[in-house]
Amino acid sequence: MTLIEQASHHAKYHEEKEAKMKHLEEKFEKLKEIIEGYAPVAIAFSGGVDSTFLLKVAYDLLGDKACAITVNSPYIATWEIDEADALTKTWGVEHMHLNFGLPEAIKMNPENRCYLCKTEIFSAIKTFAREHDFREVLDGSNADDLLDYRPGMKALKELDIKSPLLEAGFTKEEIRTLSKKMGLPTWDKPPYACLLTRLPYHTEIVVEDIRKIETAEKFLMDRGIKGVRVRKHDKLARIEIAHQEFDKILDAALMSEINLAFKAIGFSHVTLDLGGYQMGNFNQDVKRGETS
Image 1 (spheres, rainbow, N blue to C red):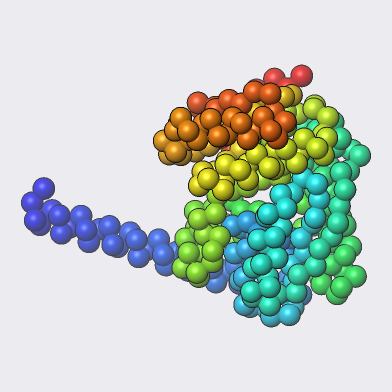
Image 2 (image 1 turned 180 degrees about the vertical axis):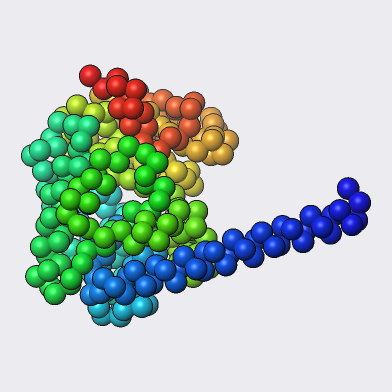
C-alpha cells in the first residue's frame, strides 16, 4: 500500500468513526427525550450494563424524579445486588428493594419461565412504583434482546413496561461505548443473567441448587475468569467461559483447585464445555424443539 493509499485509508476510517459517533450522539438525544416523556420514572435496576446506563442517564436528567427498584430473590446473585447498592449509594439515587420468593408457577422451570416470572415481578414493581408516585416503570431491554428467545419480553409488553433503550434503537455494544465515555464502572461488565438460566428446562428449582451455582460462579470470578456460567445437570457442573479465558482455566493447579472447590460445594463431577460460553445456552434446545 502506497503512502497516498494509506492516508486515504486512514482518512476514510476516521470519517466512518466520526459518522458512527455522531449517529450514537443522535440516539443519545433521542433516548433523553423518551425518558423525559415518561417522567417521573422508576428503573428496574439489576446493576448490569443496561440498567446502570439507563439509571444514570435518567437520574442525570430527572434528579429525584427517577428512582431505582431492585428485586431481591433467591435466583439473583447476592453479589450483584451488593454492587447495585454500591452504585446507587455513590450517585445518591433513591433505591428501593422488593423481596420476592420463588413463584409457584415456575417451580418446575418451564420454557415460559421468564414470561411467568416477569409477569409476577413486574406487576409487583409497577404497583410499588405507583404507590410511590412514579408514573412509569422502565427496564433496560435493548435491540439485541430481540435476537434471542426472550419470552419475558412478552410480559413487559403486556404490562406496558417501557424500554427506552430499545425504543431508541440502542445495541449492547453502543451502550458499552457510551457507558465507557461516561465513566461507568459497568461498561465492560460481563453479561450476568438470572441464575435460573443455569438449569435445564423442566427441572425442579431448588433454592439450595441455586446457591451452589452462585457460589461456584463466584469462585471462578474471584480467580479472574470472566463471562462465567455454571450449568447444573443433576450433580454435574458444566462450566462455560469465553474462549479467550481458556488459557487461564487450563492450568493444572487451578483445575485441581476448581475441582476440589466444586466438590466441596456439592457437585460430584466438574466439566468444561469446549464450546465456550453461549448466551441463553438452554434456549438452543427450545429453538430445536428438544426440551421434552
